[in-house]
Length: 515
Ligand SMILES: NC(=O)C1=CN([C@@H]2O[C@H](COP(=O)(O)OP(=O)(O)OC[C@H]3O[C@@H](n4cnc5c(N)ncnc54)[C@H](OP(=O)(O)O)[C@@H]3O)[C@@H](O)[C@H]2O)C=CC1
Ligand SMILES: O=C1O[C@H](COP(=O)(O)O)[C@@H](O)[C@H](O)[C@H]1O
Image (cartoon, rainbow, N blue to C red):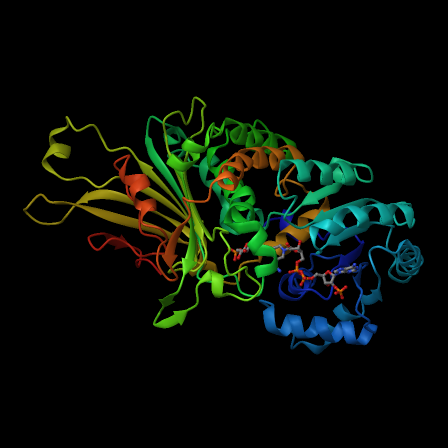
């Protein structure tokens, strides 16, 4: 553990809007508990749960306990620890549209400051539908919540808008109340251990960075695949689809981390400057025909996974039975800059695919084929694979001589399995992000210009799709998506590399093999 990890966040009141919702239950309460257990929350903190449903403090604490028992990576069976933690939690029923509730909240806050010796610091976490972000901000201001001595920070969930225009409007509303440096836009992928590790791998290793360009890299493949379907989120997802749900945010952020230039300083603004520059280099699709040539959208229909029959998307509850919403997205994109000119980035994401995984594959160009050795053997390209989820780690695939007199070359994979070393109990993304927000550390939150840039890229695709949906392809649930996705790479002489440790048969593994 580094010195940095040991610093507890300053004392603050955490206002959890949406405290009776799914995100709070599955992610936020467990994250706060882990931070507390690890000493990353100062003792002088309070959490105020806020939502319309009536709850007593005791009922709220019971909800929190249940959530931790079910979802926390730490057990809640240390009664004394739990009691100490729980006494920091209070609940207030409040309707976001009623400013009087906020005035009452301001009074409650003063009491909490006194009780827990909190220096007026306020962290407002909006686990709410996005149409409530603006009204909450105005009522926080009008209700007198922003007048204490300490700092104010606003943490907001995705989606940040529906398109560039709505995102601009939302941003304009928030900016009337909060400064950009007070706004922490969550993209939970940026809280993932291995996404943060991309920077370290790239910029701390002598043998990666010199090769990290179009002279040596043939293509980059980013896969965010999910086995789950739309579940009970049809109401939201059917309007959003994979493009807005995963590509505009998580996918664009991962791509930016892979493609960005080294920042001159490790300051949050320098890092985010480089990310936004990478996003600006993305070649926009100029016409609907270009979108059709480089982008594939799909929707799952009936199928099966591990022998279990699965319904099609249109049969899911709260989904329009004639929906044309995409549950699958794949694209070939290019970055028009010196480093990446000519290197295709293949990105794909989808629901009801065969495995849950997030992986980045960097495929290197082969050695020149005028070398006698390379010509005599069918060499497999070198790969660097960054495994983000569910296993964390990296492996590289190289060519080596097979022992023996035959002079045969075979691919060999060398693995650093982070999850095998530290167990799968690494901090959840939300722990890291709440902790960072509480310390005012904004590196792993998205700045407005990044969000806007990602929307402007994505909007062109959405507009082309809106005009004509005849390109929507259907794929059986449990498959790897529309067949055309393979053709996208085959046109360039490439193919998708196996993900999730499903290595090719002929690869020898050093250090155990894929998990
Ligand atoms: N769930 C997840 O895994 C993820 C969620 N997100 C984002 O997080 C946000 C919250 O999602 P989620 O928790 O799933 O949503 P839910 O629908 O489960 O929860 C919404 C919350 O908002 C409260 N609420 C709604 N209207 C009002 C109102 N007028 N006044 C006060 N409170 C209100 C509800 O409480 P009540 O009804 O009691 O008022 C409830 O606590 C969304 O922006 C979502 O996109 C992002 C990534 C993942
Ligand atoms: O933001 C979202 O992410 C999840 C996938 O997150 P992961 O951490 O489990 O990979 C996705 O299921 C959801 O649709 C989307 O809103």
